Image (cartoon, rainbow, N blue to C red):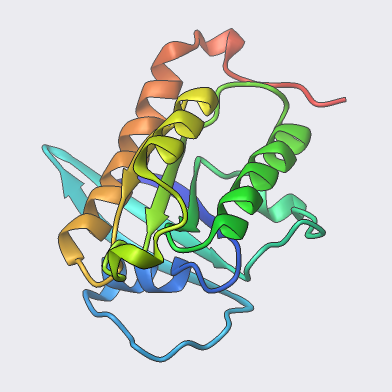
Length: 183
């Protein structure tokens, strides 16, 4: 029986959230940009001997004024927070998203993978350095990687990492300490 995991992908508009999800789920990259309202995808896959049924919620882009609805908090196992390495604004919004998650979930350890996407763009377009992304992920207690949604292997690694992060966070707490209370 597969283990169920529900993941939410968050980030500024047009950072590649949908492209990463579709590359993982369907194994293809779409060149055309269509703004997402919200999509939900399902995929069953194996990591080692363990089988997972993953639901991936691909969200509309967030900005500094976006609110996180309860559906992005309740029953969610982990988060993939995406920014574009070619957009400092998207990196700043990633920080804002994390703060909003903490406000909604409490200041507890959350399974998060921070992803600097669009590494396939020309080097001169880079606005966020690898070290900045790694430093932010370290401050969050999150996993970090850079990726291109055009690369199926890296897209797969992102979703493998979030499963590993969920397991790591679950193991780091005793059953009684696992839950955070937000007042």
